[in-house]
Image 1 (cartoon, rainbow over the protein chains, first blue to last red):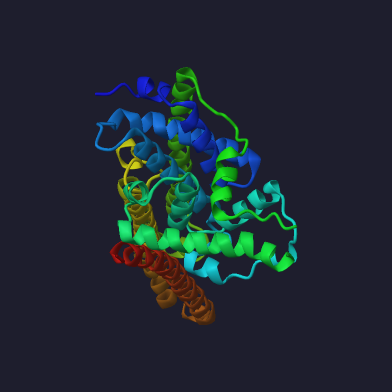
Image 2: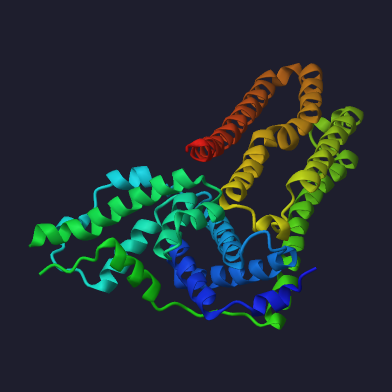
Length: 173
Length: 199
């Protein structure tokens, strides 16, 4: 039986940073985000007891982290009237980009977070994995979606990002 | 000049952001495991304690009947025994199927789609069956009490009719509310299944 503590100690600084970014995609409030991040680390430690090399460590880490974060989102939304949207719906939601002629990197990131945080968990997982530059096969392995399905979603994500973050520039030129 | 970021730069901006570097020590993880286990146990205890108080009130009323129940103490005892039995059944179902529990470690690493679906399915089953294990078991006790009072106190017909009406409205609203919640969760599951089957 693998030693969960030994595996947990093997988490590299890249993994740690990715987990921090993932937590930000799922929780806007800094206090709750800190708790979520601790829950993710705790969940990883618990899960490593069952790690048997059936997938890469990275895939394992992403799966566990996304599952815990998705559970967190579900709990936060219970009893509230906030409705998350799918990628299809996100494409048609009007956005304020046309009014921006100049957007700095930080503002772009903030708007990116606003987009990501309104998505349903599965679509949020795909977009976060895309932003982490994971390929379609890796995203499929993490999410359980088929590779063609992932490719369709990634295509939609690129369209949404290009429209929201590049159209404003074209209007402003 | 506009400086909106194209998607490739967004990936770099995303990966370059400052984030909180959290890594817990093994001692902290073990302490968290203990706190987590205590919290789950506490949540379950609070729930069972609430039901125990409810059952306790009815047991007390069995031996200290009030109002109309005082005029029919034996019927009142049978009626309240049935309510207590119903509460016990509810606690049994809760403990067996729906108690607060941590997600088992062996489920955490499931593919995200399957994991999310299983969580939604568990909640859907909870709401879909709730009326049968939380409300229905106490109906026989209440029904016996109301029927016995209606037969023995015909001059209070209006009061009995109002009681029955209020209870029926409560049961109907509960049924409706639970099933609406379950249906909402089922729609999410259906969307996930469509997503999984799309290729």
